[in-house]
Image (tube, rainbow, N blue to C red; front, side, top):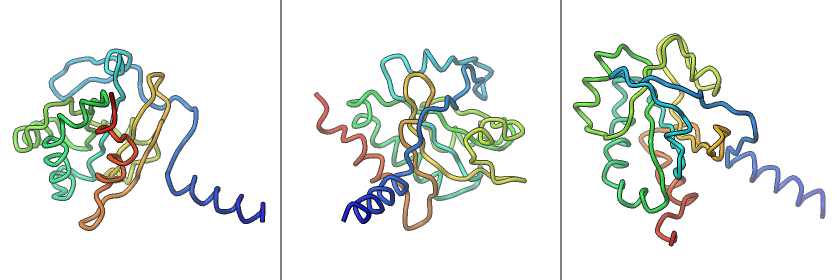
Length: 167
């Protein structure tokens, strides 16, 4: 019986995509407008949520950003802030920002420098789509990799955060 419980627990833990203690978020990042942002300032009294875009033209990724924008008030209840990571040139990312009007920093993943650390590079031209929540020290609190036209991970992050029940 213990063996079955152990296997079941291992399966549940591995399927939630939880990762422990290695610091993976860079101390400093520069957004596409040239603003240098420190992780400590982003994470001050907030949970940082990194959203990776598979590609700049990924319609599923763009729709997800639009849905998250509609839920900003809900996410603010649990002190969530966002950073969007994309592998494209700055001009293309800025055009995307105008299109989706998502009011958080967009970061260009030059040479896959950030996505490689997170094992999210899908070279030569894409990132693995993911949503990652970071602790205040830059370690991963929660992550969900993958997105499709039938699974967006929206519900998974909402269930995990349970912002409606924050006081």
